[in-house]
Length: 174
Image (tube, rainbow, N blue to C red; front, side, top):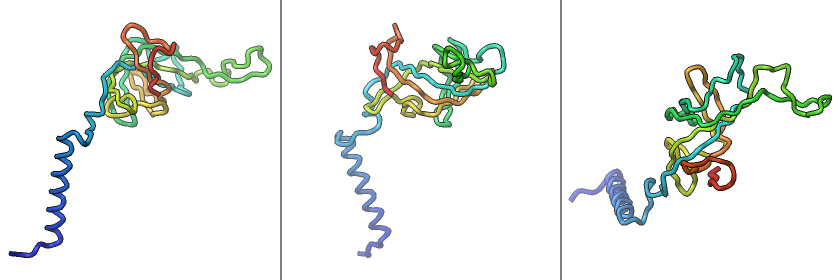
């Protein structure tokens, strides 16, 4: 009988370990990634766009249009925009009766919140969209025919198809 070399021992050990892992997974002692998904649910998430420069007459992102979304520099898919709120950048003026007024020095600078809907896989850690956990603070890029804006996720919520509101009835995943 020939002696086993060190490499032979490592290979045999690796095969034995792989067999144990396979047995534990098959017997449900070890939880795999697909077992962690608890449900699939429609979600809405809001992307905050800070300091967007738009010199045209209207904001380029429109309600009920599609926008291509990139999450963490990984292209995902086109999703429907359900709401857009944009307003000119504000500044504080001690001489005005209202403290926050439109900044006259930067008339083309806007802040916007874009609401997008999608279907996500729900895990115990939160919603998963396109293989990414969707959490507040995540960098997101919105791209359309005339624009490409970088923003940050500012809200993530489950919703039912009848209503979407911020009343607390929806579950906040952020």
